[in-house]
Amino acid sequence: MKIAAFADVHANFEGLQTISEHIEKWKPDVTLVAGDIINRGPRPRECLDFTLRKIQTDSWQVIRGNHERFVISVGHEWRNYTQYELAYNRPIFWTYQQLDGDLAFLESYRSNYKYYRQMVRKSVWYMPLWSMIEQGFSLKQPTKN
Image 1 (cartoon, one colour):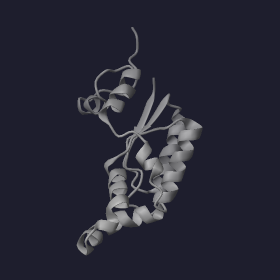
Image 2: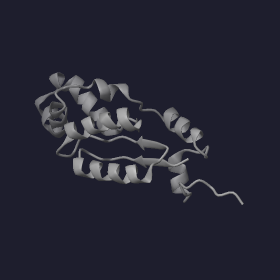
Image 3: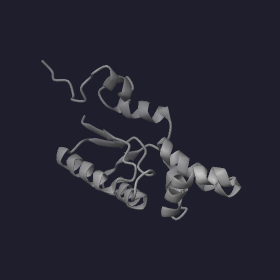
Image 4: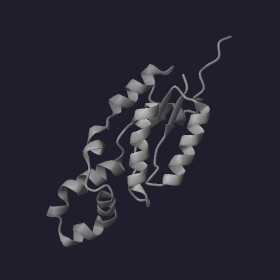
């Protein structure tokens, strides 16, 4: 089973398009987006819309990252912020505004460790993906002798 996994797009639309082109050429069985599609970069709306299309057309699996969590939090709480808190969170609030305050999708996708384990169990391995990478395992399926 071939798994394509990436994260930390941070609203870099050109980067997201490039990685998508590489993934399409590689033709993995599963594409896992491990969060941080939006925030910190210039094009959060385009990145979110592109990812939504890929979920529909190519069955991308998306896990909510901490930056999606930040935008959700600011989106719900900004009216209660002090002037200092609003200034501190201005870049996150800007991302929220670029999304037109639409948090429904961000709130709907998975954000927990159990989902990582489930994805990995469906593949060849049992241990969490990040542990495999730390230990130097290859993402290639083992060959049989």
